[in-house]
Amino acid sequence: MDMNTIEAVVRTTDPADWRDGDAWLAGGTVLFSYGSTAFGPEPLRRLLDLGSAGWWPITVTADGIELAATCTVAELYALPEKLAEEATRDWPGLDLIRPCCDSFVASFKVWNMSTVGGNLCTSLPAGPMISLCAGLDGTATVLGPGGSRRELPVADFITGDGQNALAPGELLRSVSLPASALSSKVAFRRLSLSNLGRSGVLLIGRLDGGGRFTLTVTAATKRPVQLRFASLPGAAELADGLGAAIPAGQYHDDIHGLPEWRRDMTHRLAEEIRAELRTPAGAPAAVSGDFWPPQTLKTKRGA
Ligand SMILES: Cc1cc2nc3c(=O)[nH]c(=O)nc-3n(C[C@H](O)[C@H](O)[C@H](O)COP(=O)(O)OP(=O)(O)OC[C@H]3O[C@@H](n4cnc5c(N)ncnc54)[C@H](O)[C@@H]3O)c2cc1C
Image (cartoon, rainbow, N blue to C red; front, side):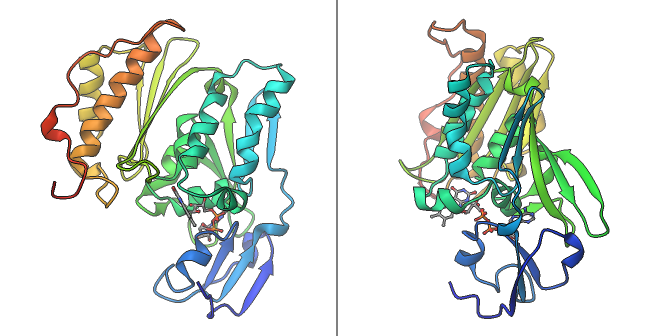
């Protein structure tokens, strides 16, 4: 896509440089796909290029993992293997990284350019880096004009379909994934209407050392929804919790899935996750309830 309204590309990471008509440029896979007239009532005039930021992509400490906003999906994909070589940490949460990267409906070429921050800031319901970072209780650090700095949960950073908590000029600097979440037992489920299609439903469950259960629903809903329980709930309690937390209008509706299908699959996959997490490692998980009645098997709009 030509961006023929662009007058300048400025290498900066300073929000003070931002002015109306500017957009932060990370991997550019969205900006150069949509073009410069798709990001607001006025066309973009300048791109503020984060390519020169020089931010270390991934920092691992005893407290957890910090992902720079400019960390690419390819760099993130390589992380579990690198940490496995070190064999110094027991972080089952790392098992979520590759399935989330694989949930990107994109070639390896796009993976090498796409950034974690660009995915969060695009804020699509099917953003797999959103699923990962929200599912692991990530905290987003946001820099603003005037030197401000604020932190908020990734689950709150995304406020709707294509919407987020960034004010004009603000910049997502990084996401921190806490060790407490990384050391949880995790379960991952994803569904798409087609084999290599965009995620229609993506759920992540976590059971932490204290037995607390967190379920993060993404892709099915317009923005991440998290449910927290003091212990692993029963099937009915979990289903009731989902019903209360996700009103019908909160399910996403686009070509990648009807809201009714997304709701039914959310309930089904949540129960699968519950069954998996209550089962000792190695034993088959028993799923209770009939969560996939044939009448809900609508795989195409109007079918
Ligand atoms: C073939 C293909 C398949 C794709 N599949 C998927 C998919 O399955 N799911 C999905 O969610 N997306 C998908 N995308 C869209 C896109 O590739 C991803 O969302 C990607 O992660 C965007 O990252 P980027 O670094 O390229 O962002 P950019 O294009 O550089 O930026 C995207 C937006 O975020 C803003 N931005 C970027 N970084 C920051 C920052 N640090 N702070 C503030 N604002 C920032 C930009 O100003 C722009 O508005 C796909 C794209 C292609 C081309």
